[in-house]
Length: 228
Figure 1 (cartoon, rainbow, N blue to C red):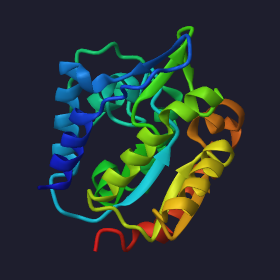
Figure 2 (cartoon, rainbow, N blue to C red):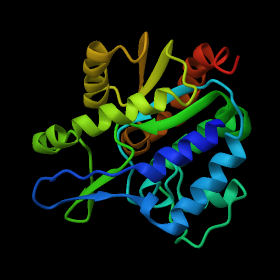
Figure 3 (cartoon, rainbow, N blue to C red):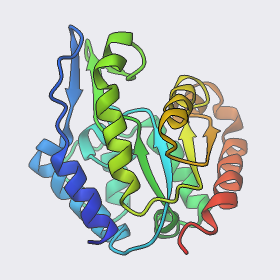
Figure 4 (cartoon, one colour):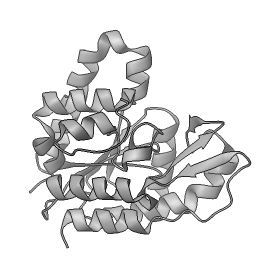
């Protein structure tokens, strides 16, 4: 199977059948025919090969990006720009804006995705009261979804992921939690934290170019051998 076929099969099989805290809803775009069609187009366009890639792990999808398109840090506008037409409302997401600005400076989507695979601790997103929710925001949510997240990481490692190093988007709670899990399961030899795109866009926008350069410098240090 190609890398793309493994990813698509993984997303099609996702099922979070555990009780969640009161008021918390899970977003599973992969149960939607439109989103699954878009995923199929995206991954077959950029991952239809057997290359090894370095994993970049975010928190969980948001309701304006991966939570509706099924592609991490990729909103409907970015999909259009990648040559993947879609009927979704053309609303942008801050995190996607940063990621694709970085990808452009990295050398474009084909070069970036040939070397890296972007995912999240939880491939499914969460909302409460109509707002995005991080898996660690409520301790009961974290307890409920931890086994699911562990299974997801283990499965994704078999796609063709380098275990030398991974990048964690988020230098605080997401990084601390991933390091904790890595200590238990030995997913990767090293984990490098990067400032989360939303944090950058909300609180450090005037330093945007500095963060883009920092991302690229860190990624290049690891990605150069990831596709060998």
